Image 1 (cartoon, rainbow, N blue to C red):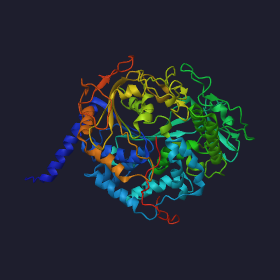
Image 2 (cartoon, rainbow, N blue to C red; image 1 turned 120 degrees about the vertical axis):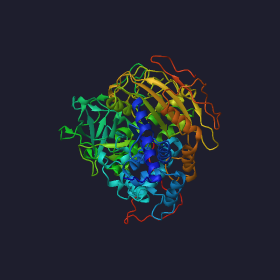
Image 3 (cartoon, rainbow, N blue to C red; image 1 turned 180 degrees about the vertical axis):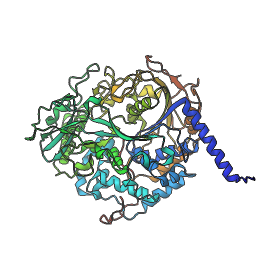
Image 4 (spheres, helix red, strand yellow; image 1 turned 30 degrees about the horizontal axis):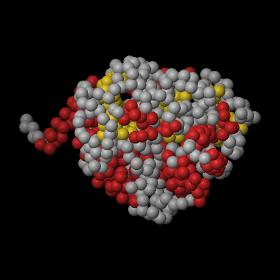
Length: 635
């Protein structure tokens, strides 16, 4: 019998064989994790570029993926939800031969869409004063205007945005697709996807009624800190995981009568004012307490919290929850509104300004928060309801997970320890935010100056009383996500271990670490697992949300997909058994020199490491600007 070979087909089969061989060989050595921060448009664009680079390296093919777990938060989660659940998006973005060209066409299509606009809404004028406080507040008025056509409903606006994106990639029904194993594209059938979302401890369900969440094992108490939640889509199951002990689940719900006007003092039981008083590095406050200042409603029943989206979320529902960066400023989340107000009042009081000026700034800020709370529910839905219908007495409010485990790393390490307990872990962490302040998120995985004395997994409110520049570390209290005992004291310690990527149009930096896990029961992490980390920072000043300069986004994509040094460092980290070299580290510059990267091994317990819209017909939107509308969210 004669067998005729098709040369093109033969080469294709050989490439599949060697790709599978490479993936299986590397998988036998260690687990591989890719963890992502948020960052709105920046995160969506750069995460797409990294995924395309990984595909070109042979780690993501048509049929499998080298990664055991991939995580996403906010803007990066929007990218992951498109890539994991849309074959068309996967084919045209992840496996694109020219991602810059593909994304330029996409951005241009958004730019020319007559139904998309950002117009000034007078109801957003009340937020103009927030811009003076900098940070994310500088974007709040623009974000408000962006969501005005969606009646300030974050979930509706994000759903519209996902439909706009998926329609361009010829998959207009993606937003309705269930985020479950059977819906994943073939490439990621064996890769877990973890999406991080924050749950507020309180949710306003009526003008004067607030639901408080509490632990099942002590119904006399309620949570006074945010709750970290991960939605995991595994190989055969999908589920919510909350970073609390199992005996506290399912959460209880209790209803209270809530004040109509904003007053921080009404929420003192929620560890206010910031910082918690008394506070010391060796004293962690208890964040479980009965609310003393609010009265229970006449119905004193204790209910059971319904799982978000009945435990079966769609891609759009997950996207809306994980991107809700201003959810902590929603009147429907009154405790986090007061927490945010308290942190910024602390900053105002610490400024080197004349006392009358500080009093005026304090008054402006409080008046803005009162405007939010007394606006007849207009801005309630900036915090996403945990159900698709109106929130009830057994529901909660969701917000951007970037306020918690900002690069979605700690929970993923715990997941890998459960999946592959005997393996070491290699983790690529891509931080799509600014390097400076956002370094703080990464420091929290180690023993740093502001979590010293706090047991891993215990409740605390990150705060550094010794450094005025670091006063605002987080606007909500949380559980400590420290998973390594090694010391990484401050941003300077981290900067000493980073080096830049050469190139005229990039400010990307990388750092390499070896560390060993310690017990952290909140994140199901046990001691003794070796974790190697390649930490990559984008260090970009591009805004999170539109209007955004398309050329900035395309520049990220071009650099990540084509820069040979960045590719070499990533490839060496993943494929070499021990990519540590003896070259010195150095602080990054705009166009740094190019010696090979260095990772300083950290052996516990050593001191600090040394440097060695769906387009709805009912929503006709007049095009008033040519800037594109982009992904929302941060952190």
